Amino acid sequence: MTAFPACSENELTKLMRNRAARDSVAMNFFAAGAYRFFTPALVNEQTIRLQQPDRWRGKLLDNEYHEQEQRLQAGLQALSALPHCSLLAQDRVTTLAQLLRQLAPESNKRASVLIGATVAPAIRHALRCQLKYDAIDLVVVDYDKQQGRVSPKHLQAQAADNVLAVIIGWPNFFSLLEDVEQIARWSHQQQASLIVLSDPLAMSLLDSPCNPAAPSIDFLLGEFTSLGLPVNRQGCAPGFVLSAQPLQGDLEQRAGTQSIDEMALIIESFHLLAQPEGLQGVHQSRRLLDRLLQKLSEINQLSIRFSAPHVLECVIRVGAIDLQKAQRILSGHNMLAGYFLADEYPELQDCLLLGCSDLHSVEDIDKFASKINTVVKNLSTAGCPVKPKFDR
Image (cartoon, rainbow, N blue to C red; front, side, top):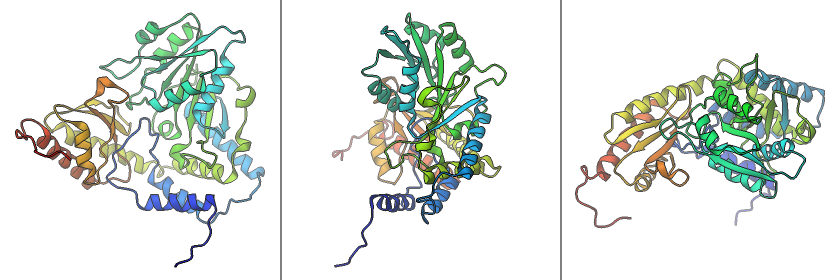
């Protein structure tokens, strides 16, 4: 019997992460809205490199670390055009709930928080759990079914006497850009704070939704998922909060509880993306997505439902076939064909959310489009008039 060396939990986690990176499927077009699971290949390589030697273990916080931390804060402030920044050793849902409690009035009077239906469903569900025992009602605001965005008309339909805040995603779950200025005007008319959820990758790719001269966003929250740290060893994803006004209380500064090795990885990954060559692969991903959209638009019964320039994901509509069955067929060919939207959005029961990454090639795009074309033909009534006797 072969004897294996004893591994600690942290060492075992690193081994599993490294093996998962080596075994990752190249033909993976799964998307989850606003880059939540998109980590550039360049960052992935650096993550593995930095984790191998354990060179950060046991290192104490020093002046050099705090200088790097300040550079990271300055970089986030420049990207967002918001003057105040705090790095947090907690996920953005926890930070969001904490922020809403600070904004809530001291009286026991209940307040309403309007959150767009285009915010990632996982975030909405987690936030509802966080606020379960608070005097805050979380109200989901519908979106324009044609445009895929939240509008002031939908906000007005849900408006209550005491609106505490309005929460939107940027980009939203359909990878579209909300009209931040318009929503901000409505929110401020209601004396409500506008809270935007984003991340460093989106902020690096897109122009800031905030006007530096007159900031329309009150708070911008995000996580460092795209910088190689989806979840830390405490079970949460480190994040940040940016604001137009100075932060108060526990949100003012919580980065000191973040472990030095994880913070070092965040800082180095952020600086890597700040270099001209850092986002080169990400821009290539958008060009590949444009090619995929062109290929898919040539397929009968398939159309582009939602798509925005410079964003790495899109929503496609496939009519007259069983999408879940199509996904099973494609998975048999080592292809993950996007996120099935019907579970969270019944009106999009024939739609998939998918995206490209810098792990794909032109050949991958052509192969994927060709396989989808074949599946659509075989599952459609016209392409397969005789039903199979056995359905596995």
